Every structure is written in C-alpha cells, then in structure tokens.
Image 1: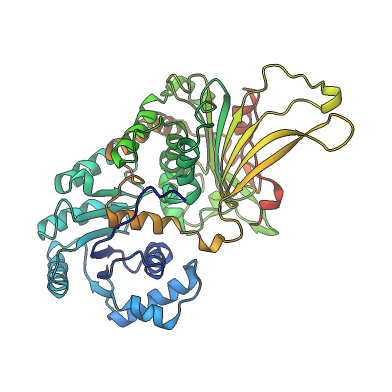
Image 2 (image 1 turned 180 degrees about the vertical axis):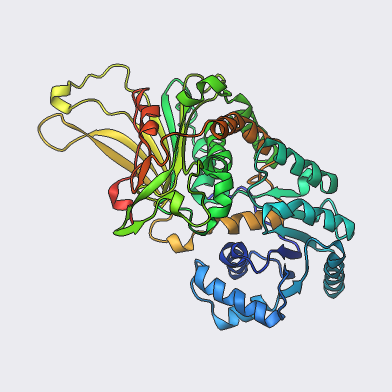
Length: 507
C-alpha cells in the first residue's frame, strides 16, 4: 500500500471556546478521544474547555464522559482509557467578551509549557456562535496570548459570514491578528472519507483523466438531502435558509473537488488554488435568469416513517408567513476548456424522502449503438455514482449481457465499498480535520479567497430571493423529493434527478 505522507504531531494545547456546547460534546471531544485511542495525539497534550459556566474539572470531565459514551464511533469508553485521556482535560470559566478574562488562559499556557519544558502548538477552537469569532480573535490579541506563526492556530466553524460583506469583514479582522497560514476554516464535509477519496480516484488512476471532461461527461448532479426538519435550529435557520446553510459551503466545495484541474502536488495552497480556479470559472447567474437557473421550496406538513410532522412555518421560532427556503436547487456552469457546456445540478433540502449525499457523473451515450432496442431495450448510459452517505461507496454503472441465449443487456454495478463491513472503524470527519490542524495541514480547510468566491457566486440568488417573496410557499410535502419547479429545472434539459434506491431510506 502506497503512503503519501506520515502525520507528525508535536505537543499541543487545545483551548476550546464553547467547551460545554453541543458541538464540543457531539463532535470535537469524541474525535479527540478517538485520536487518542488510535495513538494519533502527541504524548504531551492538554485540553482546556471554556465557557461562562462555573464548574470543577471533575464535573466537566464527567459531562464529557457522558457525551463521548453516547457519540464516539468506538462506543462506550473503557475505564482505564478514559482515565488516561481525561487527565489531560481541565476547565476554565471565562466571559469571552471580556478581554481581561483571557489573562487566565495565558497563565495556564505558561504553566503547561514549564511542565513540559518545551514550546507546544496552541490551537484556539471557536466552537461558539459566529458573532463571537472576531471577538475571540481580538481578545486573544489584547491578552497577548501565544501567536507564533508556526505553532499557533485558530479554528473557525461555519457559517463563515452570512453574506459576502460579512465574510470579507470577518476575514479582514482575523487577518489583522493571524496570518492566513494560521486560520483553519472548517467544513466537516471535506473531512469525510469518501470525499477525500475523490482526489485519489481522479488523480491516482490513469483511466480517469481521459473521461473526466466535456467530451465524455453529459452532466453532473450533486445532492445532499435530509429527512429531518430544522428541529431546534429554527432561530438560526430562519435567518439563513438552505442556500446559505448548505450550498454556499458544502455543495460548492464538492463541485470544486469534482471540477478542479490536477494539482502539481498535494501542497495545501496548490490544491486550494485549483479549487479557487473552479469558483472563479463558474458562470455568474444574471438577475433576469435566476428563475430559469434555480428552484426554491419550503416544506409543508406530512408523514415521515409513520410519524406526522409539522410544516416549516409551524416549527419553533419560525415566522407564520416565513419566506425562508428549506429546499434549493441550482444549475451551474464552469466556463473553461474542460467543462464548457456541461451542466452541474445541485440540490439540497430538508424533510425529503431520505437522508443521502451523492455525486452522480452521467456519461454520454455511445456514439453509435449497435444493439437494436427491440433486442436489448433502449440504450442505458454509463454512470459513476459516488455515495457519501448513508452507503459510503463508489459505483460504476456499466452495461453487460444478461446470461442466456439472447443478446439482452442489463445495468451492472462495479462497486468499491470503501469500508465494507467495518463502518465503525472509519474515522469521523472531525478526526481527520482535527489531526490536520494539529499537524498544520491546511489542505482540507478553506482559504479566505475561497470563502469569498463562493459567496460572490450565490449573492445574486440570495438577493433576488430576499427581494422577491415566493408566492407558493409551502410548495412540497414532507417525505417528497421537493417542489415541482426543481423537477422542471432539470427536466427541461432532458434529464431527471437520480435518487438512491428505496432500500437505503432507513439506513
């Protein structure tokens, strides 16, 4: 098995703002614990959780133990393993809006450095609401905490801005304090194993490059669908909508990986340069063409797996006449030599028929079909299906002869099941991303220009939708595949949305 590189870790201090929050308990701490069990963490590491709450170290560790037992992919902890791991955890109460409160962090860092007798990496993790990102950065600067170019990093969760102007403003504030090489803007989709494997599929296999262009690809679909509604995120979602929440980051990042040119190496900036090239090459949608190139929707009530669910406007913290989109579909073009004329269809939504994420590469028909339709049925096109969830697999759908005396064709799948029957052993996205942050690898993290280019692309649509209220909301029922105008968006080009088989619905 060929190895690209070995991950090398150095002594690290994690300072988690929002240390008692849902993100820390569900994702960050289970990821760090799993890295510890798999011997990826350095021998010397410290985790300092912080929030405005008052609690002892032992109480904090017990709260985290409950969370790790519930959310770790490895199941419940073993007593001796948790004892070793939790001995590295402490808690510090602090008001993140008060710069003087940050003095205590400096004291803790200095104490740990003396104990270890070395200079560790310092990772500031902003697991807080977006409005606190710049405040934390500014208070780190005021307190003159560790800010060495090579050893200090700050992790920023999404959403990174609510529009282009706010994203630019946040970038400006962060870059006044940190260098771009220190800023890790996290998008957990980029840490998923199958998403990373797209790079290997494309650039480690000689047979892929001749097929990966406008000469052979008819169109591309990227779908991220969810059965769940907004749940307890109504207040946030009402101000965001699915176009902001999903397409601006997750789906556009998938487009970049699919459409990017081969990088000359795996250097972080080289890979990210190629992704930015894709965003810059994307055709901007003129205001007069937005209705023809997009579709939006909002779910009504219905039934999900035998349970009645309310419509979006009846959810908690949602306005009775809300115009917020819970479904969005776009038709995009990448205007360059490789992809000219190939449409990219993106869709995402809540309260849909199943939870699934997939990328479909639809290839063109054979130039001359020698098999008569009356003998073999209408010709079927080849398709590459990249399933990100629930089934993590890559499938080539090809035509093959059915066993028998007649020449009948049938679609067969050549399947690469990425994890086989060992799904529990695959690392979670946050494990991959946290390890990269520890080792200083920014390849899977978004750069400032990448974030801003994504916002530039969708701002005309956001502005148009906000100024022109939808007259048909709600326009799709729960447990459906979305509004009719989304079907029309792709059907008018002669295509249809590809849905995962029904057997995956409850996976």
